[in-house]
Structures are given as C-alpha cells and as structure tokens.
Length: 406
Image (cartoon, rainbow, N blue to C red; front, top):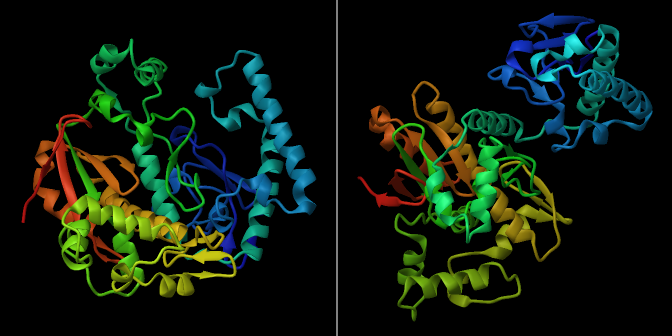
C-alpha cells in the first residue's frame, strides 16, 4: 500500500525516461501520470516538474538512499537492490540494449514491487525523522534548472581546438570529449558543502574551461549574453551586516573612493579588502567601519555550524566559517535568480546555456533581444537586495564584449 506519513503519500518513480514514465504507489503500478494523492518520493525527476512533491533526498541533504536507510531496513534494501542490479546485468550480458527498453520491461513485476516498497519505507523513515528543509523548494528549482541545461548539448567549433591540439593538452582532452559526444553540461547540485555547483564525471567541463580555448563554444541560437554579479560575496557581506548601502558602482571602485583614504587604484583596493576578508585574524580599521564580521558570525555561526539565511547548515571551524557563509549565501542568492530566469525563458527560443559561480550565460535568439532588460532586472533584484551586474555579449565564450544600457 502507498503509505501515508504526516500527510505524505509515498511513491516511487519506475524509470527516469519520459517515454517510460511510471510510478509505483497505492499497491499498484501506474503509467503516464502521477496519482493526485501522491506527494512524497525519494529523488528528483523532471516528469514531476510543477507538482507539489516533497523529496526525501532533500530532507537528508543529498545523501544517497543507502546512506539514509535506517539500520532495520538495510539488509532488506541491499537484498532488493542487488536483485534489481542482477536483472539489469543479465539483460546486458544477453546483449539486450537497455537503452531501448523500459526498466519495467527488464525487471519482473514482483521484484520491482518489492524494491519500490522498501524504498517507500526508507522515505517514510526520512519524512518522520527530519524536518522539511527551509530551502526545499529552492533545491527543486535548482534541480529543474540543472536538468534543463543538461538537455541542450554544447555546440563546439572544432577549429580552435585543432589549432591548439599539438601544444595544449586541454585542447586534446576537449576534442576527445567531443568525439565521445560528451557535450552536455551535467551539474551536480550536491557537489560541495557550500552548495556551489560542480559538474559530474562525463560532463562538458564548463566550470574549468580554459579561457584560451573558450572560443570553441558557440551558441545554438544567434549569440551569447553573459551576466555577472559584481562583487557578489562582498555585497552579500554588506547585506548580512545589515548595511543599507548598496553601491550602484563597481564595488572595488566604491571601496577606493569611500572606504580607503590612501589608495588610488582599484586593484590596490581589491587586494587590501580581500586580505582582510579571508583572514579572520586580520584587522583593518577603515574596512571595519563598513563591514562587521563579528556581528555576521555571531548571527549565523554557532556551535560549529554555519546557518545561512537561505536555508543551508554547514559544519565549519572558526577559520572557515565566514568563507563558507559568504560563498554559500552568495552562490544560492545568484542561483535563485538564475532559476527565475530559466523559468522566464521557457516560452522563448532562448535558454540558459550555463552557470559558473556568480555568472550565467544565455544562448540568445535574436528575436528575444527585447527581453534582455527584463532579464537583467530579474538577475539583479535578489533576495538580499539589489546587486549590480555586468553584461557581455559575443559569438563565442571567449570573445565577449561588455555592453551597457540604462
């Protein structure tokens, strides 16, 4: 039976693929739809987009199901999972192409039923023993954004890679990836303790794409538009310090003119600020007139845990606490805006191509150019206040030119 637990109706997805979509719940297999009373399952699935579903994997902070499984269920879970893998391996050994079959065509119904039942029990245990995370909906939105990005393969111009092939190992690696058709960006939303995105093994390496080779990435539509939050972690510190000041100019220019009395260049102001920011033992009277590290740490760091205003809890020591707080809060604040833009673009030809830390790149159809001011406004109007952004446009990811408009 589908188990009711604190208002949660537990079910399991039978297969990730749209053409094979089905669920197990209420003691039966249901295909092509999710029953109205099913509201809780283990993990994300794109077919559940827009539904009010609670995910046990979010409740346990991205742990694998075997890690979240209680001791009294582990033996049963392992036995059922082993059986499922045996059927899949048997099909593979028989030269049956799994890619062309649905999971419920490969695994006998009674074994699939037993496996789903024990997964339901694990989910029930999680929902009973964990509070619903403050950032649950954000994590769902983040998954959907990452999934949408993964559906668009990266368009690669091989010529720049061929030119660099003999003297650049990264160019050779990229060509090998393209030859293996590894041209999709696969983000891992659980890849770091602070929440910053990483890419999964086999993903196109957008996070560490060498600048000299970035001209190999070209848009599917007409051009790339890249938006980058200016001094995101610094503006985050301003917001968490309850400082009403939100400089509309470049943050390091602002520091040079308003914080430091004896510095005459942006680079010197930037160097001095970061020397103070990431060393908790440093002191700088002029910086501390504007920023209150002690206030921020007292509010968000207690008993070895950083509790961010956007819902994450991160174990930390004293030295790294501020760094974790700013990196996590800044990243989540930016990703919230990217998720909004991802939804905003769904009825257009344009789409979110990629995200790298505090910047996002849109693959823009020229017919959608009129919505760029709206996109910029969405990006800058964050939960922590207004954050300045820069905009660059180009025909590849290397040759990007900064533009501005009122």
